[in-house]
Image (cartoon, rainbow, N blue to C red):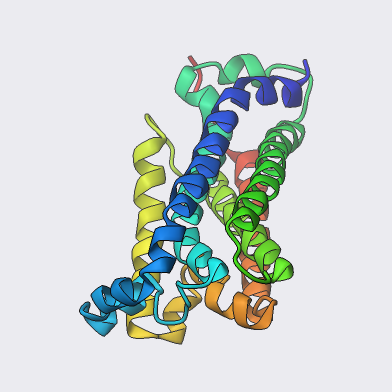
Length: 265
């Protein structure tokens, strides 16, 4: 039984839907850029009426919305949000689906080790994320380039888009970990939305309060778009933090799943 191929087959439609949603979001938001850039003074005067804490929370204090890259950076947080929901949902469901559908006995009596099962399932999730991000980066770069007025920092644009999969990997690892520590998961979406939006709220507080400690709690703060545009690079400390958290959560998932009592039918 090819677990990897079966998982890919089962998750292909979902991946296509979520990828389409991400690309459509870029297209719709970027369609709004030309009229906003023409009347940027009016738009900024409206934003300036907002409290400074709210403007910081929205991330518009460090971005030039008259520039196509700055505007794209402004909307990218919503792309991250949707991509993170998909990643978290994939991470939770891929190991818990047999228990929810009561087919765990059928899978575990097969002549394959538990580590082989986890390997195949995680690889299927990573494959979906890889395909999704290749399509997203390619098409979003084409869309943004279509709206550029002058020169465009292509390296910064690629780095911004590449941060999507890095945040997604955080939520995949977290989803995998939660799927083996929460004994009964009836539905995946409520847990997914609750966790992702909790981290998103922490990010809003982090930007509003400008508290360095909060930044390390939420992955949404690890890849600051304003900093990427300014320096065309990532913050090394956040890169390391993200890698360490992903590694620790993944190792814990393997260890717990090896010793986990799987409920029988």
